[in-house]
Length: 264
Image: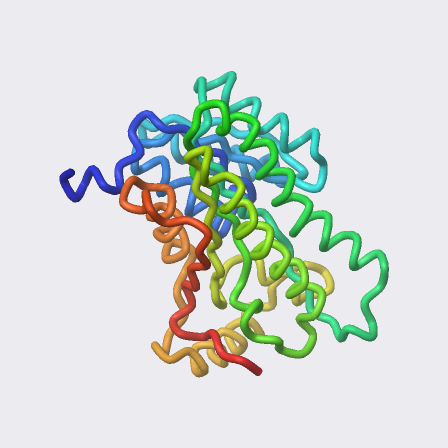
């Protein structure tokens, strides 16, 4: 196999949740650049359309659908669109998620339900919908997004970390269950990556550029490589995990974080 073919996705179809921005948008774009037709889902419907529009403007195939991943019916519809529009499903990238920072003692039941619904149930629903299509075909690749927080129990990350630890364990179990059907399941655990995901740190959801720059500088200083990666760095790992180059890779956690992982 030629090196270029190892990372080629010609003829394949991918669903990407959280595709309106950040790691999701970068992943949708790189999968499309590798030859896949992409179905972009996000609760930000206009943002999803923008990502799909950017892909089609480059002569590639993509469609978008507003998707609330906390609703099983929405996720089922997203996967159904991939099959109806492009005839199959080869790749499921469950990237949609939200952040949260709060001491454990202050976590409300509403906080808990919201984070679990989006970060954990949404991934479960995505995996279930994908497997319904992939199992009969005896092939497929699922990439679920966790976080470096699974290795670093920092203060105020209790709830967010619980959801991402859940994603990690779920993925490893699914790798064992789906492997006999020819389906690979892996976890991407990003480190601090500057995107609009950081909006959870601000009460009105609007990122304060000055404060955010200071936070990013602080994060880069505790990163052994000395700088923060970007969404494209995460998307490149998604491409690898979905490509023929990773045909014997399953049940693993890939930490793209410049060496940030460390116990508290």
